[in-house]
Length: 291
Image (cartoon, rainbow, N blue to C red; front, side, top):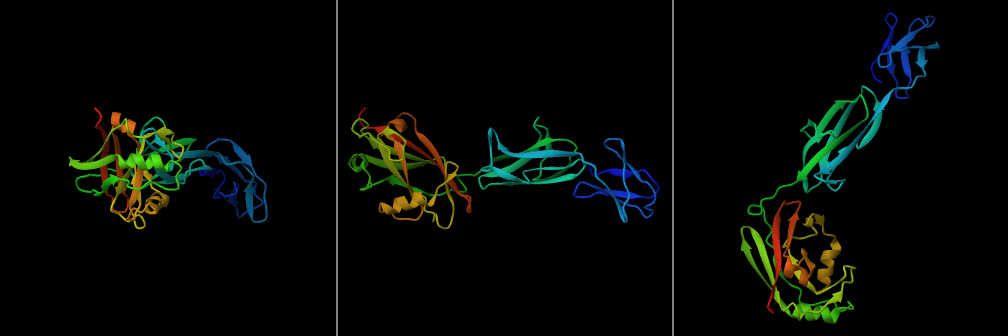
């Protein structure tokens, strides 16, 4: 509790960080009584040579913060500093919300949804335990104005070290990929005989399917800019794997898809960079020639 009052003449009191009340009393022979405005009960204190120390507990409250975007929460969206703390009642709490690259700050609300502030820096006087929610939204990109120009093709050479090499290479040899631009979106069409493709087990634990490898060259250097695929930053391994298979370019990665899935429901993905704030939408479908 920060707001206390000395009930005697001219004496002034203050709460020390240790949780004690320090009273400046020039006449130490005088018994001092002070009253907590919060509790309204007098506290008797002893006298020392210089100051009076009251060993009294300080009423406190705890605040907790949360970064949220719709139903999603966590530090992948943003962070609030400080995240939580227990402080004396009556103190002023200062919060600062910092979004991650894919999000932007909207407002602070309480658990009931009441808007507390619309700026990322927010201060309030704490009087009780409270949860403060920092709301974010996905950063908006205009694909027509801020677009990557990726080159999409099929993977030509499968991994010789993979136990599924023969089936994987067979599938790659029996598909083709074409692209077209429609309303700012890249429409990629994989063509092949779905019944002729081979099924095999993914080495990454994603199950059995008629796997096909699609190459996406972002034409961005991943060593100089972060590249994101559907909201997750692609690790260096995604690009080194492509380089291992002889795929040129520092911004090319392999997207493994289930042919039978995209034949029924096309896959919509988005790719974007953070430093240049570019984004592009890609729709990948499968055209079955055996129909």
